Image 1 (cartoon, rainbow, N blue to C red):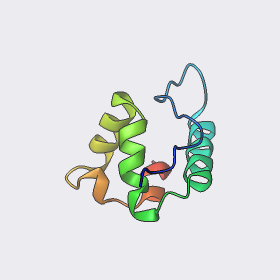
Image 2: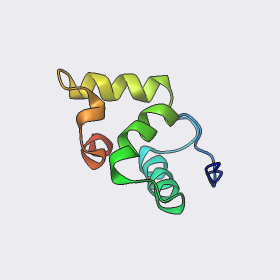
Image 3: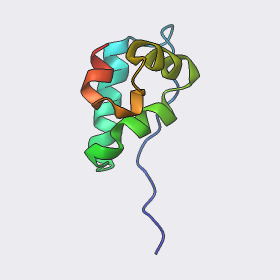
Image 4: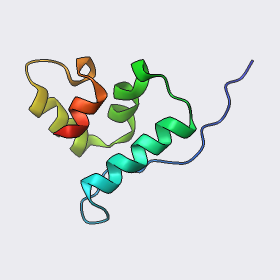
Length: 77
């Protein structure tokens, strides 16, 4: 059986377009409306946020891999 299509779209983070707070809020709503399991939130964040934000999260969480961090801790940076 095919998976249900996801609702909405998350573009890569662009600080010229919106604030970090707004981006995080949209991510939280995206997770909620698509019923994304807590265990998949960090992977979803890394896949959807774009290279710039992904690189920043890797830098901020080094030497741990950012996928091993709790989603909220990553978003709190």
